[in-house]
Each structure stands twice: as structure tokens, then as C-alpha cells.
Length: 246
Length: 116
Image (cartoon, rainbow over all chains, first blue to last red; front, top):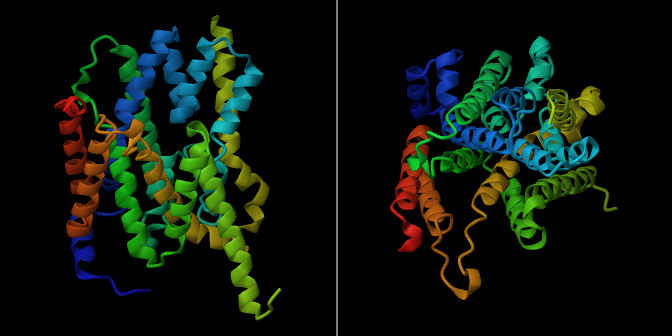
């Protein structure tokens, strides 16, 4: 264990860990992203003819940003159930990689584990993998963060569906909060890991996918490639450790 | 669309989405201590985080159509991202970096930067 630096200690004494309050503070940036994005989904759903309770059910049971936009778009286009199932599987397949890196982490999460798995969005994954090391065995904190993010998404879509005509559009641009969150979490991960490797891989995979893959598949391609390169790196480092030059 | 159709639609989407999230736990739950899984657990999250940043900023195409791209999603997005980065390296206060960065972006977008 590294010795804690003084700044960190003072931050943590201001924000108590393990309470709903500190979980809510942690999820604030997600709230700024999920409320407007959820509202956009709610508005779209109503416009397409989905009743408000349908939009609510979708945010409650599906809980996938891009996935829900796709679902209502396919619904409007009159797509069949099989088509919808396949499209949803494809769009959300990046979640497989998230689970891979949380297998150990979610062990022993008990009754809450199915919910933690269900609620694993990009943003929740980002927050959970950025929790300080000493907090990682406390699954109740992970559950609070997951549930609050889910709540922001539900409230956003419900608000959008209910007030679809009276939305104040001067909140334009607020969804940048999610981008800002990803930047902050990347910097925090870099500070904690102090190794360039995963970031170099991500740069290659990210820009490679940006150049080579159509936009709607870019994220999956980039994360898939990242995972593949990490697998190769694992094999190399293992054969190096054994001293064999295969 | 009848209520039954709508509900079956939602259930199918919910199951397909959950499937993508539960597959690794269902298939590899007993391998959680495998060194490869630990390797991914260590390096995948930081890499994914940077990929998400690149993904979120992908609207910035500096020379779209042979011209400087200053569309609402272009230059303002990059400038706001720089603000977040500098502020966070300097003060290391997550909420401050996010709130100020988002405020900058909203200001640029709402003041009609795209016409400027």
C-alpha cells in the first residue's frame, strides 16, 4: 500500500464514505448527463407513440442509453422482435468486456450481485472501477452508486415523457458532463496506475476504430480491440516471465 | 401498437441487454482468480475510460470538408475538454472540473459558437 498523501485525507474527511450522501456526490456528474439524456429519450418515446408508462418501463427494465434510443427507433420502423433482440445484443455487446474485468470485484456481493450486473452501464462501470481501493470490498457503496445512476436515468426519462412539450431547451450542452466525467476518471485512473500501457493501447484502439470502423460500431470495435491487445500482452508477459522464447 | 406488443417488445430488449451484461459472470464466474482475468481487471478499466473519452469527443473533426470545423459539437467540445483536463490536473477536484468544464461548453454552444 502506498502511503496516503495529505490532500487525499483532507478530502475524505470532508465527504464521509459509505453513506448515501457521498454516493450521491459521486454520481452528480452522471446525474447531469442522465437527466437530459433520459429526458431526450422520454420525449422521443412519446413522439413515436409510446405511452409514458412504456417509457418508464423501458428505463426501469432495459436501462441502456443508446439501446433504448435504438429500441424506439426500431419500434417506429415496425421491426420484428427477433430483429430488435439481435440489434440490442450487437449494440450492447461491449458490456461483456466490462463484466470480464469485474468478475473478481463482484464476488461475494451476495443478494445485490444480480442488480450490480443488471445496472452496469458505461457510466456506472466508470464510477465503480474508479472507487478507491479501500472501498472496493464494500459492496453497499457500489449498490448505492448503481441505484442512484439508475434513478437519475428513470427520473430523466419520466420527466421528458411527462413534460415533453414544456422542456426548457436552454439546458443545451449539459450532456457534456458525461464527457467531462470520463476525462476526470481517466486522469484519476492514470494517477492510480502510473503505467502508460493501457492508455497507449486505448489510443491505438480508439483512433484506429475512429478511422476504420463506421460510427455506430466504433465503440464496440475500440473496446473489443483493447481487450484483444491486452490478451496478447498477457501472453507475451507470461512467456517472458517463464524465460522461454516461443 | 397494442399494450401486449409494447410489453413484449420491452421484455425482449430488457432480456437482450441483461444478457450482454451477465454473460461473463455466468460463463466465467468460477475463473475470477485466473491470472488472465486479474490482468484484464487491472488494465481494462483505465483503457476503456480513455476509449470512452475518445468516443465522446469523436465529433471533433478539425478539418471537416477542408475547412476548420467550429460546429457546436466540434471546437467547443475540444476546448471544454482542455478546460476539464487542465483544471483537474491543477486542482484535482472532480466536481469542480466537471461543473466548470460543462459550464464552458454550455456557454459556447448556447451563445451560438457554431455561427461564429
